[in-house]
Image (tube, rainbow, N blue to C red):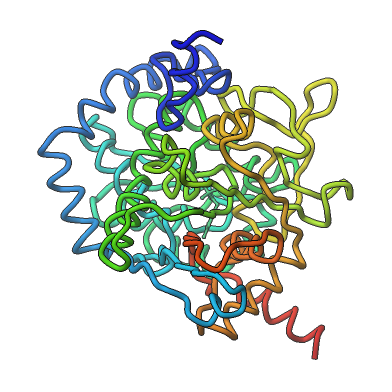
Length: 405
Ligand SMILES: Cc1ncc(COP(=O)(O)O)c(C=O)c1O
């Protein structure tokens, strides 16, 4: 390996000028989407790095979203695992998850691009609610695509989107979950290229979306560094842990640590019923190189390239791919990936609730479950991203309670 290529691989944070993280990324899109994606690619960095944009965005993050979110030392959880566990409380954001960091940023960007109509996909409903919220605030039309299965399992969020004025459109193909909602949103964008911006909710999609979303979510690790320094006099933890659906909360949690190999990155994927069960969403365990939703990444697919329908109890992790940022971390062994099954995530959600009085989102519970899979030292500093709150998952939690009582 030449020194130059070693240097290139060491930059895990951002893609190269063609939108690649190592061999993953790029923009594989139908011709009709070229103008939209090109317009975004040409303008996104200039706009989001401008002082005027940053003033408005930072003001909203602080006074509307409620940032900075706390970095909470979880004493009881730390005692149980005999280490030092800090929770990054993205669940305390306005609308209840990290998704608002990106949704607000993208809707502000869309306005500056002259767009009047916003579309988005959602799985757990958190990105849908966040986008509908940003559109209500900033006065744009909003259409949210969501799988029929997810409409049922995340009903409270569907009601919130409607109250916020969004039109909610069911995706009825495939497994009727997140992947199918993305397909519908992409179709809409092809049909409405001039007026519409597609607010993608994770670090997936064609370049520049993975980079754009990672930058908006990078506030998570920016704050962790500051807060850890204030609390214990050092900026870097030993470990950062986050769940990965497409990978946006994990990208934000890893971002400012990614190029510092003293910090170990741990990602939790949804194992569903188990990686060998045929009902799983653990992409790094089951995926191969492919193209999904406009980028080259690891994808769960048959030998002929047909996408395998994923399964997870958690709507936000029920996706047959991961973003190119994470495929690269996996390929380069920069991050360690764990597969967490449905029942393990449920157990971790109940454990956190009992020990700390915090009901986590089912997605975030996958990150917490890593604590049962990996040994940490007594003096390790372990930061876990609590990406969202569990209100939307109460029906699933109550069902579990009824079965166990
Ligand atoms: C609370 C929460 N955490 C995590 C995720 C997974 O998405 P990502 O991997 O993009 O963070 C979702 C998706 O909806 C979510 O709602």
